[in-house]
Length: 509
Image 1 (cartoon, one colour):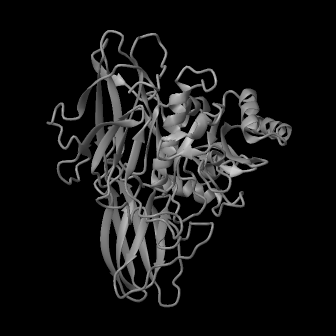
Image 2: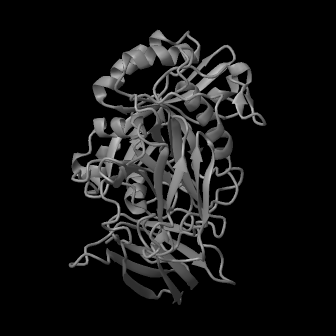
């Protein structure tokens, strides 16, 4: 337990939190959000790169307990640990120089419901970058307290080692780190914010040398050359629509026609395309449309565009210790069900991201799969192929899990980027199984689709009923609008003729 001395007129709040399902009340890393009640002023612990003593109105408890100085007043405490846990709310009143002790347990509402799924936030920045304002220790603390299992550093100019910070704070049980790095490529009127991962010390040094060799090349050619030199790395186009250095500004896009002008689009020399950055809900519409147009072109069989499928990823790209929380959104990778956090490897990450075996979420857990006709089971996962050589019928299944504090409204499926099935929740609910609204509604979440050609299927879940505040506060000014629940799946590919290839005829509906 952290110790704290009384400050003039201040009181002391002692908190200890455990996981509800553990038999021995083991301590659980959590975040405490402190909401002042009128007429008392807003709590503000300051804004520094180190969150160990609080940041704005939040306090992180990486060891599950803390002693927090707090001005006398009336407050509501919201204790949370990310999207897999319920929250604990308590109202307290503090008199001058009073000590109050709070103990409790957070229910792990997703426990046992996500076999083989491991969460990851790839590309978070530290104060090693000019754009970052958080220490490596802060990143380790935030990941543990937000329930993110894997973090990947994303500083500019270097591959920051976050595992050391995790180890130094004894958080290995909760978090595992890998290294990545960002580089801004620029030549003439073309720019790219390129994120490359996962790196080790040797690969990072080699990458530095390779960067020097492509320094005078346009970004598209530089990326192609780097990808050939490092075939085992993920090459992600980060912040693709940024007005200054977004890669897509060099490839004019017709938003009405929903296609690149003159059929000129980026070469297929990157693995992943960032659909959503942090809390910027709304940017996903344009980035998804660009992603699906590139995905369709890559699968069109035309030599000019042909390349491997493109992964639609999302991450927080957190640069600040407050207002850009780690893990919103986060990616859930489908790994082996027997995989533990301790033995997740770099190759696991590459396989999941490149293979599109994932879902992305800031709250609702969207489970999307398809029926395998041979086994008669729904076991075709995102990134995998459904063989429809003997039928034109594909059966897809959509389920949504959500912690009680996360609102949910509906789900939509898409076929080659176009709307497929639309389904809304029948009534507001706080059940973990949010769609279908009860386990007894057999078949209400299973859809039969008749497809005439190879097809890219995906789905998304959403809500505008209630934001994620106060667990995840709305963005800081100029960083976006209200922050609502949102999730999407990696695609499932339908092989209509059973030839083992996905080739889209873009002239057919």
